[in-house]
Length: 241
Ligand code: ADE
Image (cartoon, rainbow, N blue to C red; front, side, top):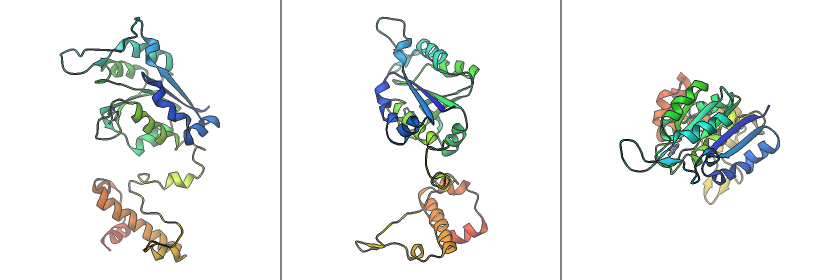
């Protein structure tokens, strides 16, 4: 069966990019099925109300639980992970993308305003795993763009979606380090040269150089990642050298 993704939102048009590019092709090829659902179809008043003032006071509006309950009853297969994008979530990582890609599918609940009544995520845990996740330490206007990010990160890991398995296995973050620089022809361009080792044909030397660049780049740009990476003695020698 194809990997199944369902997204509930009050802005279904915002998810139109999912029909494009890598993802659109994966859908055409039957590798993934994506359903986008308008939350307002599960409202029960003439104004199709999805939000209300927060208990306890404060700015903004909170999404009401009832439409969400009915939406999830309708679209979430039992046991399927529910992902709720929120700036107050755990940070989304490549490790999560890898784990989620091994599951049968995902359901995303996009909040707007000041978020969704907390009881929705709490109640939804009875039927399967619930992940409240943030894509980074900044605040978006809603979860839709975060869903685009997470859907792309997960689906490119599905078998057959990306042609070259190696381009997925050797990605930045796949081994906890950043990828080093890449070059193509011409060897000399506007006074900038391709590092000569890449033209040497010495595959062992090239592999060593790439590892050193990856370690050096991670040390300068993401020391937090380097601190948690499993480094060999050879890696430490490359870093010091
Ligand atoms: N909604 C608003 N900001 C967000 C973020 N940083 N990540 C996920 N969802 C969000």
